[in-house]
Length: 378
Image 1 (cartoon, rainbow, N blue to C red):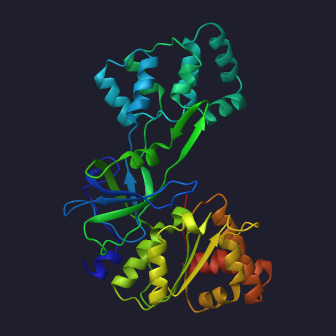
Image 2: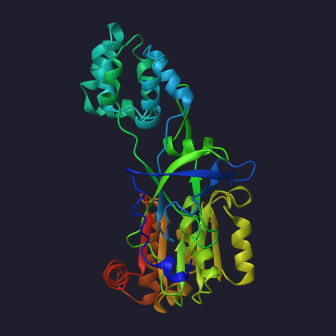
Image 3: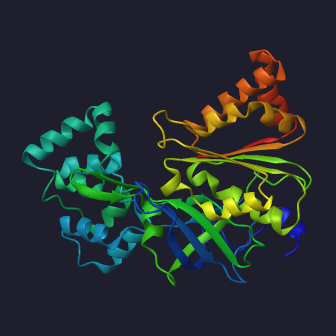
């Protein structure tokens, strides 16, 4: 595939959210080292020659299903475990790992005795109901109301529907033709005495080589690579590293002359430096011109990517003034806001601007006019 084909807008008209492609999982390996508190996976999926196509910056939609043991436990509590049609419907289309308010209210209405009183009081208070559903799944709710029964036809209308999960693609389409890579943080936690996983991340974590999975490409509207001679600054802590692995693969494959600067952060360098061998090798070879890391738990004071940005603010400002594109990928609630604040400080300090002028430059000139400040946050 030529560079022009991979930098143009991707089009996969045959496959989408309502018509996913049945791909095959080829690799599922741990990226964290022994001793890490995290479980991050490198997921490689074969799309083949007839599957959807993508470009750097796109996302892959994965349609997950519930784990069999959770489905079994749910149906057993309702005395419906012998219904194979219902079992498949629940497994593939209904959310079990997070209880919805509609389901809780329906269970409360069917409950008896003290369970009815308890759940009824919770449902009558919106704040209490929010707190109740926050860390419970459907089985937890049924545990609080033993003996509740529903007709099989009622179940689909009581539970929320499974929606696809979008993951930033972690590979260039030209790096390994017909394949797509993902970087997935497996969500794991224990509440109310039961171990639980995120719906999509748990689904991917359980898959083995050769398993099929439904996927589709969600094209990016804005998170594209710049012209080949432009510098790029990439802020990607944790799984936010995914699209920047793709960017670096693609720029190296096609001989882009723009410089590449990566900021990566996580908890510990020894256990949580995702794709460390790849990025270290790229840095040594000169393809990755600057590599700035922040491992928050390796010293008494927590250090994050925004701290490294400030430390290297003078050079970062020079890169921006030289036309560099600034990319951010990852957590929207905290990281992206902290990075934005650091960028404003750098602009004020090293650009000699007032806070108002810095805000105008970053939020208007860089973001909207020149379109050089690009985010893929979630």
